[in-house]
Length: 552
View 1: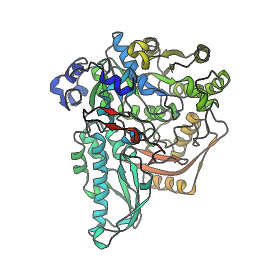
View 2 (view 1 turned 180 degrees about the vertical axis):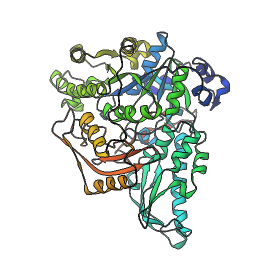
View 3 (view 1 turned 120 degrees about the horizontal axis):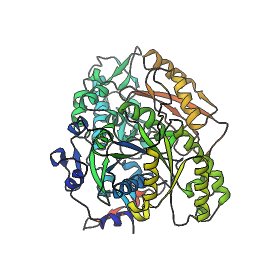
View 4 (view 1 turned 90 degrees about the vertical axis):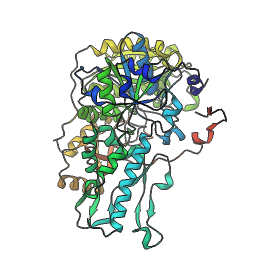
Protein backbone atom coordinates (compact mmCIF):
# COMPACT_ATOMS: atom_id res chain seq x y z
CA UNK A 1 0.00 0.00 0.00
CA UNK A 2 1.04 3.59 -0.60
CA UNK A 3 1.20 6.05 2.29
CA UNK A 4 -2.01 7.65 1.05
CA UNK A 5 -3.81 4.28 0.87
CA UNK A 6 -2.75 3.58 4.46
CA UNK A 7 -4.24 6.87 5.65
CA UNK A 8 -7.55 6.17 3.89
CA UNK A 9 -7.96 3.08 6.09
CA UNK A 10 -7.25 4.98 9.31
CA UNK A 11 -9.77 5.27 12.12
CA UNK A 12 -9.59 9.05 12.33
CA UNK A 13 -11.07 10.84 15.36
CA UNK A 14 -12.80 14.18 15.66
CA UNK A 15 -10.17 16.82 16.39
CA UNK A 16 -11.94 17.77 19.64
CA UNK A 17 -11.13 14.30 21.04
CA UNK A 18 -7.50 14.70 20.04
CA UNK A 19 -7.28 18.12 21.69
CA UNK A 20 -8.97 16.84 24.84
CA UNK A 21 -6.27 14.18 25.20
CA UNK A 22 -3.79 16.95 26.10
CA UNK A 23 -6.22 19.25 27.87
CA UNK A 24 -7.18 21.56 24.99
CA UNK A 25 -10.88 22.41 25.22
CA UNK A 26 -13.23 22.66 22.26
CA UNK A 27 -13.60 26.39 22.98
CA UNK A 28 -9.86 26.78 22.20
CA UNK A 29 -10.23 25.20 18.75
CA UNK A 30 -11.09 26.82 15.41
CA UNK A 31 -12.35 24.01 13.19
CA UNK A 32 -11.24 23.43 9.60
CA UNK A 33 -13.59 20.50 9.17
CA UNK A 34 -13.80 17.60 11.61
CA UNK A 35 -10.13 16.61 11.66
CA UNK A 36 -8.12 19.84 11.52
CA UNK A 37 -8.22 22.81 13.87
CA UNK A 38 -6.31 25.91 14.73
CA UNK A 39 -5.58 26.34 18.42
CA UNK A 40 -6.04 29.59 20.31
CA UNK A 41 -2.65 29.53 22.09
CA UNK A 42 -2.78 32.50 24.47
CA UNK A 43 -4.56 30.90 27.44
CA UNK A 44 -2.53 27.72 27.09
CA UNK A 45 0.86 29.45 26.91
CA UNK A 46 -0.01 31.93 29.67
CA UNK A 47 -1.36 29.24 31.98
CA UNK A 48 0.49 28.40 35.16
CA UNK A 49 1.33 24.92 33.91
CA UNK A 50 4.97 23.89 33.92
CA UNK A 51 6.67 23.16 30.63
CA UNK A 52 7.01 19.60 29.41
CA UNK A 53 10.35 18.14 28.34
CA UNK A 54 11.55 18.71 24.79
CA UNK A 55 12.89 15.90 22.59
CA UNK A 56 14.64 17.24 19.50
CA UNK A 57 14.84 15.07 16.36
CA UNK A 58 17.59 15.77 13.85
CA UNK A 59 19.62 13.67 11.40
CA UNK A 60 22.85 12.88 9.61
CA UNK A 61 23.68 14.67 6.35
CA UNK A 62 20.69 14.25 4.08
CA UNK A 63 20.50 12.42 0.78
CA UNK A 64 17.97 12.78 -2.02
CA UNK A 65 16.33 9.56 -0.74
CA UNK A 66 15.31 11.12 2.58
CA UNK A 67 16.30 9.73 5.97
CA UNK A 68 12.85 9.33 7.56
CA UNK A 69 13.14 12.10 10.15
CA UNK A 70 9.46 13.05 10.08
CA UNK A 71 8.45 9.38 10.12
CA UNK A 72 10.51 8.79 13.25
CA UNK A 73 9.21 12.00 14.87
CA UNK A 74 5.63 10.81 14.37
CA UNK A 75 6.44 7.20 15.32
CA UNK A 76 8.27 8.24 18.50
CA UNK A 77 5.26 10.36 19.46
CA UNK A 78 3.03 7.29 19.02
CA UNK A 79 5.41 5.04 20.93
CA UNK A 80 5.67 7.39 23.91
CA UNK A 81 1.89 7.77 24.07
CA UNK A 82 1.44 4.00 23.79
CA UNK A 83 3.82 3.58 26.74
CA UNK A 84 1.71 5.97 28.85
CA UNK A 85 3.57 9.27 28.42
CA UNK A 86 1.39 12.29 27.54
CA UNK A 87 3.19 13.40 24.39
CA UNK A 88 2.68 15.60 21.33
CA UNK A 89 4.76 16.00 18.19
CA UNK A 90 5.52 19.29 16.46
CA UNK A 91 6.49 19.43 12.77
CA UNK A 92 6.65 22.04 10.01
CA UNK A 93 4.05 22.64 7.32
CA UNK A 94 4.92 21.15 3.91
CA UNK A 95 5.79 23.48 1.05
CA UNK A 96 4.26 22.79 -2.36
CA UNK A 97 7.74 23.11 -3.86
CA UNK A 98 9.02 19.77 -2.51
CA UNK A 99 5.52 18.20 -2.64
CA UNK A 100 5.41 18.68 -6.43
CA UNK A 101 9.19 18.36 -6.90
CA UNK A 102 11.47 15.52 -5.79
CA UNK A 103 10.79 15.02 -2.08
CA UNK A 104 7.01 14.64 -2.12
CA UNK A 105 4.94 15.18 1.02
CA UNK A 106 6.19 15.82 4.55
CA UNK A 107 3.82 14.06 6.94
CA UNK A 108 5.81 10.91 7.66
CA UNK A 109 5.33 7.54 6.02
CA UNK A 110 4.02 4.01 6.35
CA UNK A 111 2.28 3.52 9.70
CA UNK A 112 3.87 6.62 11.24
CA UNK A 113 2.02 9.49 9.61
CA UNK A 114 0.19 12.69 10.46
CA UNK A 115 -3.30 12.78 8.97
CA UNK A 116 -5.22 13.86 6.94
CA UNK A 117 -2.01 13.82 4.90
CA UNK A 118 -3.48 15.10 1.64
CA UNK A 119 -4.90 18.20 3.33
CA UNK A 120 -1.72 18.90 5.32
CA UNK A 121 0.40 18.59 2.18
CA UNK A 122 -1.90 20.69 0.00
CA UNK A 123 -2.00 24.23 1.45
CA UNK A 124 -3.51 22.97 4.74
CA UNK A 125 -5.19 25.85 6.63
CA UNK A 126 -3.80 28.53 4.33
CA UNK A 127 -0.83 29.61 6.45
CA UNK A 128 1.74 29.45 3.66
CA UNK A 129 -0.57 31.27 1.18
CA UNK A 130 -1.07 33.93 3.87
CA UNK A 131 2.70 34.35 4.26
CA UNK A 132 3.00 34.60 0.49
CA UNK A 133 0.24 37.24 0.34
CA UNK A 134 1.73 39.32 3.16
CA UNK A 135 5.18 39.17 1.61
CA UNK A 136 3.94 40.15 -1.85
CA UNK A 137 1.79 42.95 -0.44
CA UNK A 138 4.97 44.48 0.95
CA UNK A 139 6.69 44.02 -2.42
CA UNK A 140 3.78 45.72 -4.17
CA UNK A 141 3.82 48.62 -1.71
CA UNK A 142 7.50 49.23 -2.46
CA UNK A 143 6.95 49.57 -6.22
CA UNK A 144 3.75 51.54 -5.65
CA UNK A 145 5.62 54.00 -3.42
CA UNK A 146 8.32 54.50 -6.07
CA UNK A 147 5.66 55.00 -8.76
CA UNK A 148 3.73 57.62 -6.75
CA UNK A 149 6.56 60.09 -6.20
CA UNK A 150 9.04 58.10 -4.08
CA UNK A 151 8.96 60.34 -0.99
CA UNK A 152 11.35 57.97 0.79
CA UNK A 153 13.89 58.37 -2.04
CA UNK A 154 14.15 54.58 -2.53
CA UNK A 155 16.78 53.57 -5.07
CA UNK A 156 15.09 51.04 -7.45
CA UNK A 157 18.51 49.50 -8.10
CA UNK A 158 18.90 48.70 -4.41
CA UNK A 159 15.52 47.21 -3.53
CA UNK A 160 16.39 44.04 -1.57
CA UNK A 161 12.98 42.45 -1.11
CA UNK A 162 12.11 40.01 -3.87
CA UNK A 163 8.71 38.43 -4.41
CA UNK A 164 7.67 35.03 -3.07
CA UNK A 165 5.86 32.00 -4.44
CA UNK A 166 5.29 28.53 -2.95
CA UNK A 167 6.56 26.60 -5.95
CA UNK A 168 9.82 25.53 -7.55
CA UNK A 169 10.28 27.73 -10.61
CA UNK A 170 13.83 28.42 -11.79
CA UNK A 171 12.57 30.77 -14.53
CA UNK A 172 11.60 33.31 -11.85
CA UNK A 173 14.95 33.52 -10.10
CA UNK A 174 15.92 36.66 -11.99
CA UNK A 175 13.33 38.77 -13.82
CA UNK A 176 12.60 42.32 -15.00
CA UNK A 177 9.40 43.99 -13.80
CA UNK A 178 7.74 47.28 -14.70
CA UNK A 179 7.88 46.86 -18.47
CA UNK A 180 5.12 48.16 -20.76
CA UNK A 181 5.24 51.90 -20.34
CA UNK A 182 4.93 54.62 -17.72
CA UNK A 183 1.66 53.34 -16.25
CA UNK A 184 3.24 49.99 -15.29
CA UNK A 185 5.83 51.38 -12.90
CA UNK A 186 9.62 51.67 -12.95
CA UNK A 187 11.47 48.86 -14.77
CA UNK A 188 13.94 47.12 -12.50
CA UNK A 189 15.59 43.76 -11.94
CA UNK A 190 14.23 41.50 -9.21
CA UNK A 191 13.15 37.88 -8.77
CA UNK A 192 11.19 35.35 -6.75
CA UNK A 193 12.20 33.24 -3.75
CA UNK A 194 10.25 30.22 -2.56
CA UNK A 195 7.85 31.26 0.21
CA UNK A 196 9.53 29.00 2.78
CA UNK A 197 12.66 31.18 2.48
CA UNK A 198 10.75 34.46 2.95
CA UNK A 199 11.65 36.57 5.96
CA UNK A 200 7.92 36.83 6.62
CA UNK A 201 7.85 33.05 7.09
CA UNK A 202 10.79 33.25 9.50
CA UNK A 203 9.10 36.06 11.41
CA UNK A 204 5.83 34.14 11.68
CA UNK A 205 7.71 31.21 13.18
CA UNK A 206 9.73 33.27 15.67
CA UNK A 207 6.95 35.62 16.85
CA UNK A 208 5.49 35.01 20.31
CA UNK A 209 2.24 36.91 19.73
CA UNK A 210 0.57 39.36 17.37
CA UNK A 211 2.34 42.36 18.96
CA UNK A 212 5.72 40.71 18.53
CA UNK A 213 4.73 39.81 14.95
CA UNK A 214 3.91 43.42 14.05
CA UNK A 215 7.13 44.72 15.58
CA UNK A 216 9.21 42.20 13.65
CA UNK A 217 7.39 42.85 10.36
CA UNK A 218 8.14 46.55 10.67
CA UNK A 219 11.89 45.84 10.92
CA UNK A 220 12.10 44.05 7.55
CA UNK A 221 14.72 45.88 5.47
CA UNK A 222 13.33 46.38 1.98
CA UNK A 223 16.17 48.35 0.41
CA UNK A 224 18.29 51.49 0.38
CA UNK A 225 17.72 55.12 -0.54
CA UNK A 226 19.81 56.89 -3.18
CA UNK A 227 22.04 58.15 -0.36
CA UNK A 228 22.42 54.55 0.94
CA UNK A 229 20.20 54.81 4.00
CA UNK A 230 18.16 51.74 5.02
CA UNK A 231 14.44 51.58 4.33
CA UNK A 232 12.30 49.23 6.39
CA UNK A 233 8.72 48.02 6.10
CA UNK A 234 7.39 50.30 8.83
CA UNK A 235 8.35 53.33 6.70
CA UNK A 236 5.88 52.10 4.08
CA UNK A 237 3.08 51.79 6.67
CA UNK A 238 2.73 48.12 5.70
CA UNK A 239 2.88 46.45 9.11
CA UNK A 240 -0.81 46.63 10.01
CA UNK A 241 -2.09 45.20 6.75
CA UNK A 242 0.51 42.42 6.76
CA UNK A 243 -0.48 41.48 10.32
CA UNK A 244 -4.14 41.41 9.31
CA UNK A 245 -3.33 38.89 6.58
CA UNK A 246 -1.39 36.79 9.11
CA UNK A 247 -3.92 37.09 11.97
CA UNK A 248 -5.03 33.45 11.67
CA UNK A 249 -1.77 32.07 10.30
CA UNK A 250 -0.04 32.85 13.60
CA UNK A 251 -2.25 30.31 15.41
CA UNK A 252 -0.81 26.75 15.46
CA UNK A 253 -2.60 23.88 13.72
CA UNK A 254 -3.58 20.62 15.41
CA UNK A 255 -4.00 17.25 13.66
CA UNK A 256 -3.40 13.62 14.67
CA UNK A 257 -1.30 10.57 13.91
CA UNK A 258 -2.68 7.33 12.46
CA UNK A 259 -2.91 6.22 16.10
CA UNK A 260 -4.89 9.38 17.02
CA UNK A 261 -2.15 11.11 19.01
CA UNK A 262 -1.74 14.92 18.79
CA UNK A 263 0.52 16.60 16.23
CA UNK A 264 1.01 20.35 15.91
CA UNK A 265 1.91 21.39 12.35
CA UNK A 266 2.92 25.03 12.04
CA UNK A 267 5.50 27.18 10.27
CA UNK A 268 7.36 26.24 7.13
CA UNK A 269 10.85 27.77 7.15
CA UNK A 270 13.40 25.63 5.27
CA UNK A 271 16.54 24.62 7.18
CA UNK A 272 19.06 25.19 4.38
CA UNK A 273 18.13 28.86 3.82
CA UNK A 274 16.30 29.60 7.12
CA UNK A 275 16.15 27.88 10.54
CA UNK A 276 14.01 24.88 9.61
CA UNK A 277 11.86 24.23 12.68
CA UNK A 278 8.20 24.63 13.51
CA UNK A 279 7.00 27.86 15.11
CA UNK A 280 7.83 29.00 18.62
CA UNK A 281 4.10 29.37 19.32
CA UNK A 282 3.37 25.75 18.35
CA UNK A 283 6.28 24.41 20.43
CA UNK A 284 5.28 26.54 23.45
CA UNK A 285 1.63 25.42 23.14
CA UNK A 286 2.70 21.79 22.98
CA UNK A 287 5.08 22.13 25.94
CA UNK A 288 2.33 23.66 28.08
CA UNK A 289 -0.20 20.96 27.19
CA UNK A 290 1.99 17.84 27.19
CA UNK A 291 4.57 16.19 29.44
CA UNK A 292 6.86 15.42 26.50
CA UNK A 293 7.12 17.11 23.10
CA UNK A 294 8.91 15.68 20.06
CA UNK A 295 10.16 18.51 17.82
CA UNK A 296 11.59 17.89 14.36
CA UNK A 297 14.38 20.02 12.91
CA UNK A 298 15.07 20.28 9.20
CA UNK A 299 17.95 18.40 7.53
CA UNK A 300 21.02 17.52 9.64
CA UNK A 301 22.59 18.68 12.89
CA UNK A 302 24.70 21.18 10.94
CA UNK A 303 21.59 23.00 9.69
CA UNK A 304 18.26 22.54 11.53
CA UNK A 305 20.10 21.16 14.56
CA UNK A 306 22.45 24.07 15.12
CA UNK A 307 19.78 26.61 14.22
CA UNK A 308 17.28 25.17 16.67
CA UNK A 309 19.80 25.43 19.50
CA UNK A 310 21.20 28.86 18.65
CA UNK A 311 18.14 30.60 17.17
CA UNK A 312 14.78 28.94 17.91
CA UNK A 313 15.74 27.64 21.35
CA UNK A 314 17.31 30.95 22.30
CA UNK A 315 14.33 33.06 21.18
CA UNK A 316 11.73 30.64 22.55
CA UNK A 317 13.72 29.86 25.72
CA UNK A 318 13.53 26.13 25.03
CA UNK A 319 16.15 23.74 26.39
CA UNK A 320 16.10 20.29 24.75
CA UNK A 321 16.43 17.34 27.09
CA UNK A 322 17.81 15.00 24.42
CA UNK A 323 18.67 15.00 20.72
CA UNK A 324 17.67 12.05 18.53
CA UNK A 325 19.88 11.69 15.46
CA UNK A 326 18.16 9.77 12.66
CA UNK A 327 20.36 7.65 10.40
CA UNK A 328 19.80 4.86 7.91
CA UNK A 329 22.12 2.15 6.62
CA UNK A 330 21.43 3.17 3.03
CA UNK A 331 22.32 6.82 3.66
CA UNK A 332 25.50 5.86 5.49
CA UNK A 333 26.50 3.60 2.59
CA UNK A 334 25.91 6.47 0.17
CA UNK A 335 28.20 8.64 2.29
CA UNK A 336 30.71 5.80 2.14
CA UNK A 337 30.74 5.71 -1.66
CA UNK A 338 28.01 3.21 -2.60
CA UNK A 339 25.98 4.13 -5.66
CA UNK A 340 22.18 4.21 -5.48
CA UNK A 341 21.77 1.11 -7.66
CA UNK A 342 23.49 -1.17 -5.15
CA UNK A 343 21.92 0.05 -1.89
CA UNK A 344 20.11 -3.25 -1.32
CA UNK A 345 23.41 -5.15 -1.33
CA UNK A 346 25.42 -5.62 1.86
CA UNK A 347 28.51 -3.37 1.82
CA UNK A 348 30.33 -3.26 5.13
CA UNK A 349 33.31 -1.34 3.75
CA UNK A 350 31.16 1.52 2.47
CA UNK A 351 29.15 1.52 5.68
CA UNK A 352 32.34 1.82 7.74
CA UNK A 353 33.40 4.86 5.73
CA UNK A 354 29.92 6.39 6.02
CA UNK A 355 29.96 6.09 9.79
CA UNK A 356 32.39 9.01 9.87
CA UNK A 357 29.48 11.22 8.85
CA UNK A 358 27.36 9.93 11.73
CA UNK A 359 30.26 10.49 14.12
CA UNK A 360 30.44 14.16 13.14
CA UNK A 361 26.73 14.66 13.79
CA UNK A 362 27.05 13.02 17.20
CA UNK A 363 29.87 15.43 18.02
CA UNK A 364 27.75 18.35 16.78
CA UNK A 365 24.94 17.67 19.22
CA UNK A 366 27.31 16.91 22.07
CA UNK A 367 28.88 20.33 21.42
CA UNK A 368 25.70 21.83 22.92
CA UNK A 369 26.02 19.74 26.08
CA UNK A 370 22.94 17.54 25.60
CA UNK A 371 22.40 13.78 25.60
CA UNK A 372 22.22 11.97 22.27
CA UNK A 373 20.33 8.92 21.03
CA UNK A 374 20.93 7.51 17.54
CA UNK A 375 17.80 6.09 15.86
CA UNK A 376 18.56 3.75 12.96
CA UNK A 377 15.66 3.85 10.51
CA UNK A 378 15.29 0.19 9.51
CA UNK A 379 14.71 -0.94 5.93
CA UNK A 380 13.84 -4.48 4.84
CA UNK A 381 17.09 -4.97 2.96
CA UNK A 382 19.36 -3.92 5.86
CA UNK A 383 21.36 -6.97 6.93
CA UNK A 384 21.94 -7.98 10.53
CA UNK A 385 25.67 -7.50 10.02
CA UNK A 386 25.13 -3.91 8.88
CA UNK A 387 22.77 -3.09 11.74
CA UNK A 388 25.17 -4.60 14.28
CA UNK A 389 28.04 -2.58 12.83
CA UNK A 390 26.12 0.69 13.31
CA UNK A 391 24.99 -0.32 16.82
CA UNK A 392 28.52 -1.23 17.92
CA UNK A 393 29.94 1.98 16.47
CA UNK A 394 27.37 4.19 18.21
CA UNK A 395 27.75 2.46 21.56
CA UNK A 396 31.55 2.74 21.30
CA UNK A 397 31.01 6.51 21.31
CA UNK A 398 29.13 6.24 24.62
CA UNK A 399 25.85 7.10 22.90
CA UNK A 400 22.53 5.30 23.20
CA UNK A 401 21.28 3.37 20.15
CA UNK A 402 17.86 2.11 19.07
CA UNK A 403 16.52 0.42 15.97
CA UNK A 404 13.35 2.10 14.72
CA UNK A 405 10.70 0.22 12.76
CA UNK A 406 7.89 2.73 13.07
CA UNK A 407 7.36 2.89 9.29
CA UNK A 408 6.34 -0.77 9.28
CA UNK A 409 4.73 -1.10 12.71
CA UNK A 410 3.75 2.36 13.94
CA UNK A 411 4.17 3.12 17.63
CA UNK A 412 5.08 -0.41 18.67
CA UNK A 413 7.98 -0.28 16.22
CA UNK A 414 9.41 2.60 18.26
CA UNK A 415 9.21 1.17 21.77
CA UNK A 416 12.97 0.55 22.01
CA UNK A 417 13.66 4.09 20.80
CA UNK A 418 11.14 5.53 23.26
CA UNK A 419 12.77 3.71 26.18
CA UNK A 420 16.24 4.91 25.21
CA UNK A 421 14.94 8.48 24.87
CA UNK A 422 13.31 8.33 28.30
CA UNK A 423 16.54 7.06 29.79
CA UNK A 424 18.62 9.76 28.11
CA UNK A 425 16.27 12.62 28.96
CA UNK A 426 16.82 12.00 32.66
CA UNK A 427 20.59 12.31 32.38
CA UNK A 428 22.31 15.54 33.58
CA UNK A 429 22.05 18.30 30.97
CA UNK A 430 24.77 20.89 30.46
CA UNK A 431 23.16 22.81 27.61
CA UNK A 432 24.94 25.87 26.23
CA UNK A 433 24.90 27.91 23.03
CA UNK A 434 27.61 27.80 20.40
CA UNK A 435 28.10 31.58 20.46
CA UNK A 436 26.79 34.73 22.10
CA UNK A 437 25.10 37.51 20.08
CA UNK A 438 27.54 40.21 21.16
CA UNK A 439 30.54 38.39 19.70
CA UNK A 440 31.92 39.78 16.38
CA UNK A 441 29.99 38.59 13.33
CA UNK A 442 32.95 36.83 11.75
CA UNK A 443 33.67 34.97 14.99
CA UNK A 444 30.08 33.70 15.08
CA UNK A 445 30.16 32.63 11.44
CA UNK A 446 33.53 30.90 11.80
CA UNK A 447 32.56 29.09 14.98
CA UNK A 448 29.57 27.56 13.22
CA UNK A 449 31.63 26.64 10.14
CA UNK A 450 34.50 25.10 12.08
CA UNK A 451 32.56 23.43 14.90
CA UNK A 452 29.48 22.22 13.02
CA UNK A 453 30.83 21.62 9.52
CA UNK A 454 34.47 20.79 10.27
CA UNK A 455 35.77 23.54 7.98
CA UNK A 456 39.43 24.55 8.13
CA UNK A 457 38.67 28.21 7.52
CA UNK A 458 36.06 30.65 6.21
CA UNK A 459 36.70 32.78 3.15
CA UNK A 460 34.67 35.84 2.13
CA UNK A 461 34.09 37.26 -1.32
CA UNK A 462 34.50 40.98 -1.86
CA UNK A 463 30.69 41.33 -1.88
CA UNK A 464 30.41 39.47 1.45
CA UNK A 465 33.07 41.71 3.02
CA UNK A 466 31.12 44.78 1.88
CA UNK A 467 27.91 43.29 3.27
CA UNK A 468 29.54 42.71 6.66
CA UNK A 469 30.83 46.27 6.71
CA UNK A 470 27.33 47.63 6.03
CA UNK A 471 25.88 45.32 8.70
CA UNK A 472 28.33 46.69 11.24
CA UNK A 473 27.64 50.32 10.31
CA UNK A 474 23.87 49.74 10.51
CA UNK A 475 24.19 48.34 14.04
CA UNK A 476 23.23 44.76 13.21
CA UNK A 477 26.39 43.05 14.43
CA UNK A 478 24.62 41.65 17.48
CA UNK A 479 22.08 39.70 15.41
CA UNK A 480 22.10 35.90 15.41
CA UNK A 481 23.54 33.90 12.50
CA UNK A 482 21.40 31.74 10.21
CA UNK A 483 23.74 30.10 7.69
CA UNK A 484 22.44 29.24 4.22
CA UNK A 485 24.21 26.12 2.96
CA UNK A 486 23.58 22.95 0.99
CA UNK A 487 21.91 20.18 3.00
CA UNK A 488 23.67 17.47 0.97
CA UNK A 489 27.12 17.93 2.51
CA UNK A 490 28.79 19.12 5.68
CA UNK A 491 30.73 21.45 3.38
CA UNK A 492 29.31 24.04 0.97
CA UNK A 493 29.85 21.65 -1.95
CA UNK A 494 26.97 19.17 -2.38
CA UNK A 495 29.30 16.69 -4.08
CA UNK A 496 31.50 16.27 -0.99
CA UNK A 497 29.76 13.42 0.83
CA UNK A 498 30.75 11.62 4.02
CA UNK A 499 32.90 13.69 6.36
CA UNK A 500 35.06 16.00 4.25
CA UNK A 501 38.49 17.07 5.49
CA UNK A 502 40.62 20.18 4.86
CA UNK A 503 37.96 22.29 3.18
CA UNK A 504 37.08 25.97 3.30
CA UNK A 505 33.63 27.52 3.51
CA UNK A 506 33.14 30.43 1.12
CA UNK A 507 30.63 33.11 2.07
CA UNK A 508 29.57 34.84 -1.15
CA UNK A 509 27.11 37.34 0.36
CA UNK A 510 25.46 38.18 3.69
CA UNK A 511 21.81 39.21 3.88
CA UNK A 512 20.08 40.86 6.82
CA UNK A 513 16.76 39.61 8.19
CA UNK A 514 16.34 42.30 10.83
CA UNK A 515 12.74 41.37 11.59
CA UNK A 516 13.64 37.74 12.16
CA UNK A 517 16.63 38.86 14.19
CA UNK A 518 19.44 37.22 12.24
CA UNK A 519 21.83 37.67 9.35
CA UNK A 520 22.05 35.07 6.58
CA UNK A 521 25.57 34.31 5.33
CA UNK A 522 25.16 32.47 2.03
CA UNK A 523 27.72 29.72 1.50
CA UNK A 524 28.43 28.26 -1.91
CA UNK A 525 25.76 28.18 -4.59
CA UNK A 526 22.68 27.58 -2.43
CA UNK A 527 19.46 28.69 -4.18
CA UNK A 528 16.53 30.49 -2.55
CA UNK A 529 14.29 29.48 -5.48
CA UNK A 530 14.66 25.76 -6.30
CA UNK A 531 13.91 24.27 -9.70
CA UNK A 532 11.85 21.24 -10.63
CA UNK A 533 13.54 17.94 -11.62
CA UNK A 534 13.20 16.44 -15.10
CA UNK A 535 10.28 14.30 -13.89
CA UNK A 536 8.61 16.12 -10.96
CA UNK A 537 6.12 14.47 -8.62
CA UNK A 538 3.45 16.79 -10.04
CA UNK A 539 3.41 14.80 -13.29
CA UNK A 540 2.24 11.67 -11.44
CA UNK A 541 -0.58 13.23 -9.39
CA UNK A 542 -4.27 13.00 -10.20
CA UNK A 543 -7.71 12.92 -8.56
CA UNK A 544 -10.72 10.84 -9.64
CA UNK A 545 -14.43 11.65 -9.52
CA UNK A 546 -14.72 10.11 -6.04
CA UNK A 547 -12.06 12.52 -4.78
CA UNK A 548 -9.33 9.91 -4.28
CA UNK A 549 -5.84 11.13 -5.02
CA UNK A 550 -3.13 9.15 -6.78
CA UNK A 551 0.57 9.89 -7.09
CA UNK A 552 1.34 10.89 -3.49
